[in-house]
Length: 92
Picture 1 (tube, helix red, strand yellow):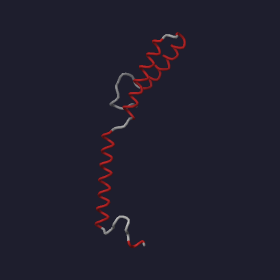
Picture 2 (tube, rainbow, N blue to C red):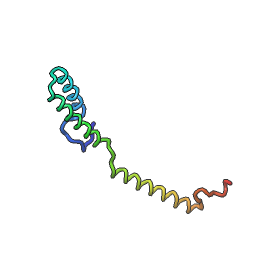
Picture 3 (spheres, rainbow, N blue to C red):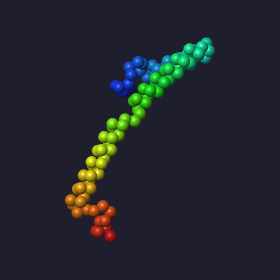
Picture 4 (cartoon, rainbow, N blue to C red):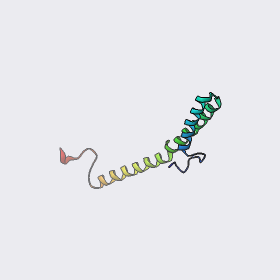
């Protein structure tokens, strides 16, 4: 299934089929119209793929904040238990 935020013109399998059909029609008629339609469908499919799988800055920022929060909690817990980073005297 495709993402909910993608444009609802045509589902990706239909776009891919239209691209192949247009290539077939171009090869039999040599009409430039079919190449132009192919370019439009290919760009549309590329934009949909980028929207679906491209970088999401909001998610990346949320993941970074959560990682920093977890690191901070781990360091605070270690200091509360008497641990110091990289200087554990019992293992020397």
